[in-house]
Length: 541
Image (cartoon, rainbow, N blue to C red; front, side, top):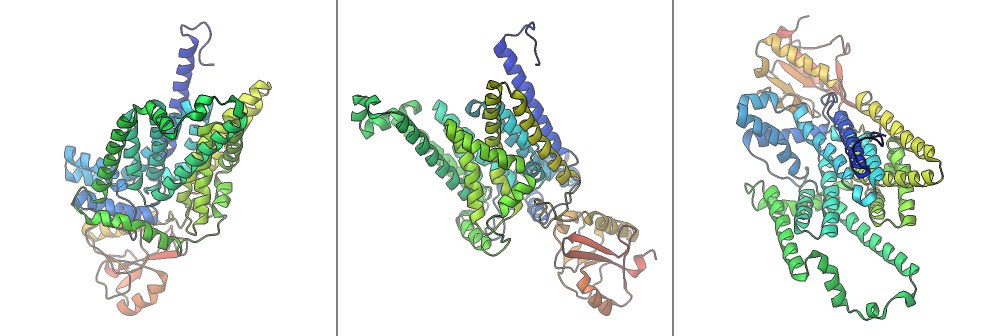
C-alpha cells in the first residue's frame, strides 16, 4: 500500500494516486529500455535505406513515395522534425553533425513505442485498472516491442496508429463527441500513410468489430426469452432503431455532418503526405493506390516461410504473451467483456491473417504483439479477481510476476547481448557488430591520408547496406557494385572479388588485417563478408 488509512486522503484519491504512480513507473521503465544505449545495435539493411531517404528529405527537401520498394512517408516526416528544428535554431552544420545520427533517427520510433504503452494505459476504463497496468507492463518489457522500438522502421508507427484508432473510436462511441471522430479519422489517415499493410489492419479491425457485436448480441438473445421482450420493442421499425442509435451522437443530421468532416480530414491528410506536401501531386496519390498491388506481388516471392512460422517465433520470444493472450480470449468470451473480446479477436485475427501470407518477417509480429499484450493484461485481471475471491491471490501474483520475469529476461538477452545473433527470431538478416571495426578502419585510413571526409572510397561489393548511412559524411563515395579500374585510396570488396582486384591492380592495393579481424574479413550480415583494401602508399605495413 502506498497510503495508509490515517493519511489525509480519501479512498478514491488514494486509488487515483496509486494508479498514477504505477502508470508513471511503467512508462519510465518502457522509456528507459527503449532509449538506453540506443546506438548499441548496428543499423539493419532497411534502417540504412530509410536513413538515406531521410537524409535526402532533410538536406535537399525532397521526398518522393515509391510504391515498388518502400513504405509510406510518415516515418520520414516525423523523423525529420528533430533535424529541421535543430537547423532552424542552430544552423545547418550543427544539425548535420548532431541531429542526424543513429540516436536521433531511432529516437522517433522509440518515442512512438513509449506512446503505444501510454495508449494501453488509456484503456483502463474499458478493461480495468489491473488489466491496463499489466498489459502496459508486458508491452514495456516485450522482447519484440523493445527491439523494434529501437529500430528505424515503419512498424512501430503503424501499430501506434492502429491502437490509436481503436482508442479514439471507442471514446467517440462512449461520448458521442465529434472531436473523437475527427481524431479517429486522423489516426486512420496516418495509419494508411505509414505502410501499405494498413489495409490488412483495417480489415482485421472491422471483422473483429462485427464478430464481437454478433457474439454479444447472440449471448444477449440466448439469455432473454421472447416473453421478456416488450411489445413496444418488437414493433420498433428499423428507422426508429437507427434514430435511437444516433441520438448519442447528436442525432442523424449532426452525425452526418461529423462523418463528412471526418472523411474530409482523412483525405486531406492522405493527400498531404502522399503528395509530399504537394511537391509530388498528383503522382504520389496514384502511386499510393498502386502500393498494395506491388506488396502483394512481393509477398509471394521473398521472405517466404511456412504458415506456422509466426506461432513458432512467438513461442520462442513472446511465450508469456501467447499463453496469456489465449487465456484472455477464452476469459473474454466467457465473461462477455465486449472490448476484451474485440482486442483478443484483433490479436489472433492479425496473427491468422499474417500467417496466411507467404511473406513473413519478424517485425510484422508487432501487429499482433501489441493487441496480445492488452488481452494478456485482461487475462491477468480476471485471474487476479478470481484468485482473490478464492483467497489465493498469491497465485495471481506469481503468474503475473513470472510472465514479466520471463519476458524481461528474454528482452534483456535479445536487446543488449544477442542483438545480432541470428539464433533469435527477431534478429533477421541483421547487420553484424563487425561493421563497427570496419568503419574504424576506414576512418583511420582517411585520417592517415590527410583527406579525412573528402577521402574517396570505392564500394565494389554488390552488398553494402547500411554503409551509405554510415558513410554519409564522406563526400566522395562511389557504389560500383563490381570490380573496375580503381583509383580511390580505399576499396570495400567481397571475398569473391579479391582475385579480380589483385589481377587488375597488382601491388597497388593491400588487404588490411586488424587485431580485431586477423583474417581481414568483416561480416556485414550472415553470409555476406566484406574486405578493406587500402592503397599501398597509405598502409603502415
